[in-house]
Amino acid sequence: MVDLDTIRAIDFHTHAEEPCGCHADDGYDALQAAMARHFRASWAHPPTIPETAAHYREQKIAAVIFPVDAERETGYRRYANEEVAEAAAGHADVLIPFASIDPARGVAGAREARRLMREFGIRGFKFHPTMQGFFPNDRMAYPLYEAIAAEGGIALFHTGQTGVGSGMRGGNGMRLKYSNPMHLDDVAVDFPDMKIVLAHPSFPWQEEALAVARHKPNVWIDLSGWLPRYFPQILVHYANTLLKDRVLFGSDWPMIAPERWLDEFAQLPIRDDVRPRILKDNAARLLGLVQETASAKETA
Image (cartoon, rainbow, N blue to C red; front, side, top):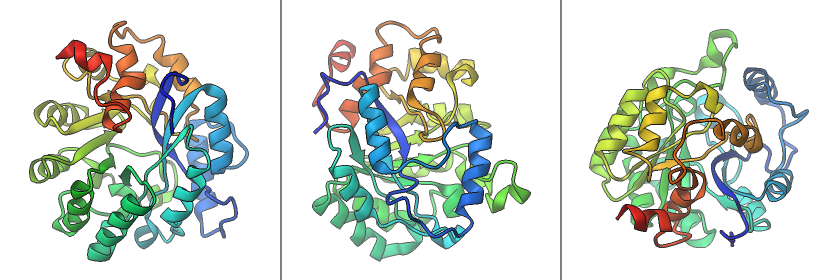
């Protein structure tokens, strides 16, 4: 269990790229190498879950961690969600497990989601519309959303441009159109009690993301995938004001190290009363680690 008194932040966006560190190369190595170049990452190989936990423990940061089930669309091997959950459970002081299920799995995927939340302590699910090749408001995905909502889970969606396939021939087949955050407006309407997180500054649809989050109280935004120096001014403004209780720190580890992100975030003109909300309090409340943070009480 994460002890909020001993950590300085909660990173809402980290990847379990190598749960066991022994995948058979199916083209994923070339993709990872291209992504590492895109993000200027410094590691020699993608970290395993124990390596990730050790890094975050040293940094006094907790992290939401997940795989991405994109096997159908990309051919990259799907990691078993149970494998990720069991590995994370051994580091429960710093790791909070999410899962990933391709919405095309339909009713079978919905059954899996319920089982993972009930038996493995999964808190939420990562969707990557561009990698998984679907529009988030496609009714195909609704049985899975219904299961997540019924169990009180969180749905975290990649939005905007992606480093996945960036610079590769044809973008490695990745189609950006799927990740326009406006598609999630329908999901927020149809599942008003499901907590939805729009991941990343949503370039080139930043204003669409802010509009959805401002209009729909069940929608949050994480700031992962970009170094803070590149954040659009309008995003910083909304994080400081209208959305101060629904914006979350996220790094996109292992492509961006959390300490690198935090060093740059410290240079942004974020209000003193807002900074702890973004770094820890908002995520703690969203994850149910506390019923209500001091920041939320002040806002009320």
